[in-house]
Amino acid sequence: MGRSLAGTRVLVLGGSSGIGFATAKAAAAAGAKVTVASRSNDKVDAAATQVGKGAVGVPLDTTNDAALEAFFSRQPEWDHIVVSVAAGRSAGLQDLSLQDAYGNMNAKFWTAYKTARFARITPDGSLTLVSGFLSQRPNKDALLQGCINAALESLGRGLALALSPVRVNTVSPGLIDTPIRAAMPGDKKKAMLDHAAATLPARRIGQAEDVADAILMLMTNPFTTGSTLFVDGGGMIA
Image (cartoon, rainbow, N blue to C red):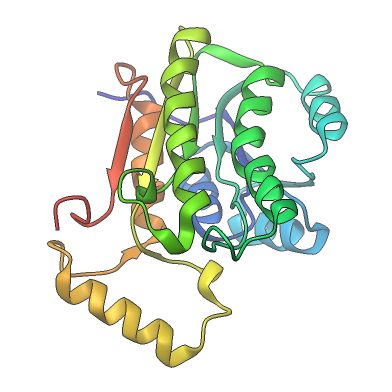
């Protein structure tokens, strides 16, 4: 039987929308004292209000090394930390500027690395990273994204050794219907989601709550560490 989240301190980086927001809501519903951190003041305040149950919102630019280190230096130990920070725009090799490429790596990979370095986590606590199935199924139109996700999964395995007995795991979502695709034309988005629902073995599109459930399982399972959990509706075998 897993551990309870009641009364635990949970930090969700990138918790103002999508998978991070769904995780914050689920953790709060399970009795955790949740802190949501994100770059936008307005978004983080709105997210904390929607999460409710005493959740706290903290504006934080995780790409700012000094700000991230200062934030963690002021905090007592966390029971659980979730890093659900998006990398930015996906594109092919010649379609993404080097500046944007470096920015994507900094936002997603280095945020996870720096969090592991700066944060204090209770010995029976956990750190959960969010990658994505492109780590295993590369796409030429999202080349760097797959590389970042693969690096995150490797980092998670290494951190499980470096931070032991703190448990470190990675969740790798497949196609999830989140606000990150809000900029897509409506008809194009619908066609993509309909095609995925028709071809995935699960015969449905993933929701942020599906991934949040997996993250909470990893938080509370005392015998899982160094693992990558795929939540992809069977996309890896389709």
